[in-house]
Image (cartoon, rainbow, N blue to C red; front, side, top):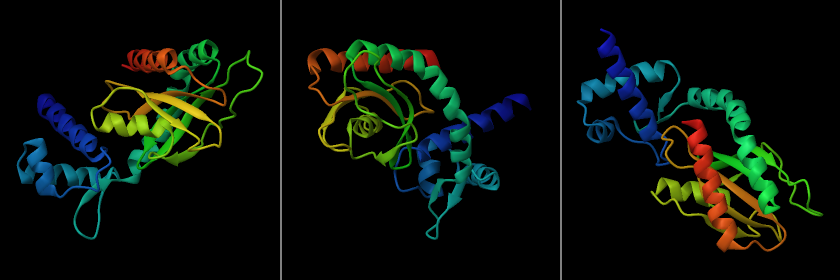
Length: 210
């Protein structure tokens, strides 16, 4: 019985991960194909998850993540922030730019943790809790790259704040989290050194969250 319950849980988590990839929902048939499960098995999973608010069905019958997932995500954010601060602090001090951890909530990026450098004369003020479309700014672009299987750092200039330059890299290897680590500054950033350093910080954070 325990093995059967564990298998059901594993299938339910796989289903939620599929729905978290940013696509516009899936039909039960599509879920069955991608999960390599029978349609009755998928319907049983959906019934349970929908009852708990973790998935919802739209008028066309497509399945999406439900608001229950957002509740869980918000409960985890303080833990993410606490775990990320040492890595972000080291990155901000080394690069001399404001460092941040951004997580995806649907088509938006949410700044969960921000650390400003202590020794610079001027730096970008970036508020924790700030939101922006994933299509704007290096942090969001890095998350979109992660969805496409790309792990390199992304660069932006002036997309979220005039004159601000950003470099961000996706946090790899965490199926349960779509996130990026980045820096933003008003001064030019040496991409040859800052890019790899940001990517290293993202990998470091991934290791600490496993």
